[in-house]
Image 1 (cartoon, helix red, strand yellow):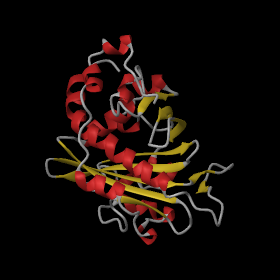
Image 2 (cartoon, rainbow, N blue to C red; image 1 turned 135 degrees about the vertical axis):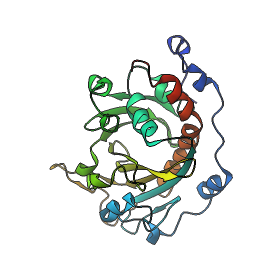
Image 3 (tube, rainbow, N blue to C red; image 1 turned 120 degrees about the vertical axis):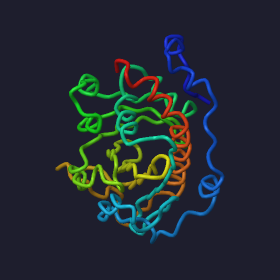
Image 4 (tube, rainbow, N blue to C red; image 1 turned 90 degrees about the vertical axis):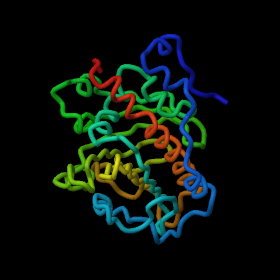
Length: 264
């Protein structure tokens, strides 16, 4: 099976060690969810209610996957990241998209090939605040979420453009926020939020699968009425998510400490 490889040039980079080391273990309770039955469809947070995700008391499924009553997919995951700060999250989502494919590869060396920003000079610009490094930037990505290697375009946008309240960013419930819609074989809205936690952060993720922009640029349900996304698709995405974010939790504090003051 085709898997990402370390090139000779990448092997010389200071962070190649993160590709060479084993991936972090996934907590057993998350593996049990991944391998178990899908959650009750009624627990999916409705796409129209997505702004509720910005608060820690967000209703519905907190960890798992399901196919919503309208046929769309829904994935929720919460990862405790010890020693991680909101600044590290904002830094990571910009930093990994420029300069070297290894930055994305080492996040999940079994399933990530590359993430390439279409505006690298904007991302690298020191005058752009860390929490805005993804705004209006598209990432061309090759990865495998468990259904085979696939190409997609992740279109990152400022939160207000995707239905969120930017005045909440910086509060304990929403220390940092990254959101994008994905275009490809499985269109979706992706939103990540860092919440305050003792000793680190809670990295909370939601995916609404089957949503994307219409011709007017508005996010709408793309799954035809009466059609449902196969359960294996949100199940696979949940499995990939728990894998990549377990590993990011393990490596981010040291990657940030070692690389944050170097040129992007």
